[in-house]
Each structure stands twice: as C-alpha cells, then as structure tokens.
Length: 217
Image (tube, rainbow, N blue to C red; front, side, top):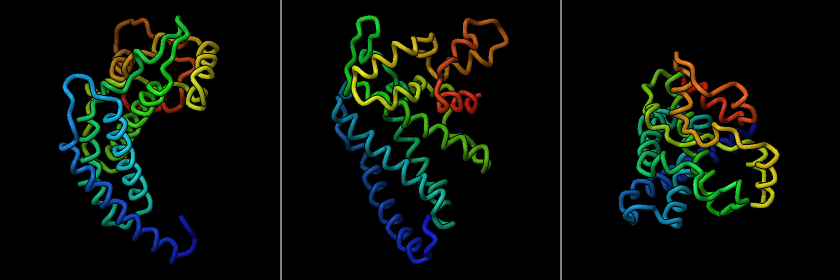
C-alpha cells in the first residue's frame, strides 16, 4: 500500500511470517478443548479471534501479496478458514438470549460476541463468493449452511454501551426479518409464491446485510 518499493517489500516479508504463524495456530484447531453441548464463552471467543486473524491474512494477501501468495491463499489457506468457520458453526452466529427489547434487557458482552460471530461468518461467505464470481472457483459455502442472521444496522454497530444500543433499537423498531436466517430470507426472496416478507420489512437493513442477500441469490 506504500508508494515506496522498499516499504512494500518489507511489509510483504512480514506478511508471509504473519500468515505462517496464524495458520500454524489454525492447524491446531482440532486440539482446542471441545465442550459437550454449548460452547463456553471463553473458548468461543478465542476461536473467533483466531478465525478473524486468519480471514484478515487472507484478505491482505489476496490484495497485496505476490502471485504465489495469492494462489496459496485461494487454494490452501482460505479453504482452511471455511473449514474452521464450519466447525465453529454458522448457526451460532445469531442473537437470541442476549437481547430482549420487550424487557429492555441486554447482555452486552454476549451481544458483542454474537454480532462479531455474525459479521465474521458473513465476511467469510462474501469472500468465498468473490472467488466464485471473479475467479471461477466453485463456491465452498452452500446456501443451506447460511444459518446465521443478518448483521444489525450500522448505528447499532457503532453503539458503545448496552443502554445506547437499546435506545437505538427502540428508535429503529423491530422488523420481522431481524431474527430470520440468511438462508430463509434468500429462499423467501427467490420463492415464486406469495410470502409475508415485504419491501417495508427490509427498511433499515445494513448495507452489509443487503449485499449479503443479493450475493446469496
């Protein structure tokens, strides 16, 4: 990204090291402690941080890496990211017990974690889709796997406290699509039959959510 060739060359060297380090950790993913039933918050957060780091490396190498680095990301590294996301679970990426607008209740730390899960899995799906659209690579993620909900609107993303978020959500309202999975919404939009999803239900959707539904179709 620098106009100085030396800076760019040095940055790429460090990028190679960072890639190796992150994906060495990702290769140890199966050895992480597995809990029966619900994944503990600490373990889930640690896995999510590693998944985010791996996705960041893929993104930077895809745009700024050398030709062989880009090919390695496409053929080896990103498939490992998809496998890790699948293992973590697309269906975990949703808001449920962390938020109750009727009771004006929010578990702020859990809400933040769930929103990070939603956005991370969404970006992984979009990254996979760009390989399919622009590079002719068969998609690795199926529509049937998209059991996460849409990310919350941008004003919610910028909230710094739980109380601030509740105020924003009260102003925005609670559209019916908020708790629908991306899979269900895409299927409804593509259905030839009448359904209860109307254009006004889409009001207030984030740009990220809108792009995700378009790509999903």
